[in-house]
Image (cartoon, one colour):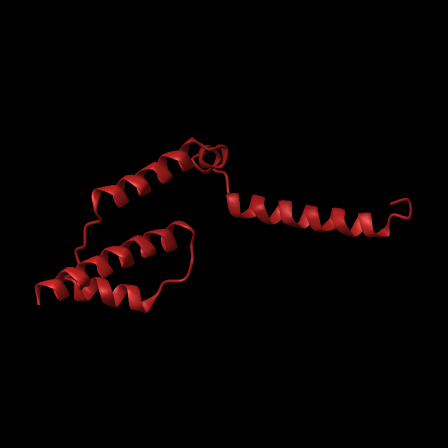
Length: 101
């Protein structure tokens, strides 16, 4: 029974880690992960090593250029990304029409 409890705790820790990355990268949530966390008691702490890895990822993200842009007030990264994608699409269409290339 102790082994099963430890196994359930580890599964809940992994599910917590996966849900953190799903939130970070805006991926759809998984019902299985949420149920594993609830079965382990709902309040699951990550081991130090995993928590340290997540902390390092967030520090790197904040230090990046995009992380700094995201912290600027009044800047909508979503619209900026959409505009960049449409511009890139326009450039591709222009390149396809070009007879020299």
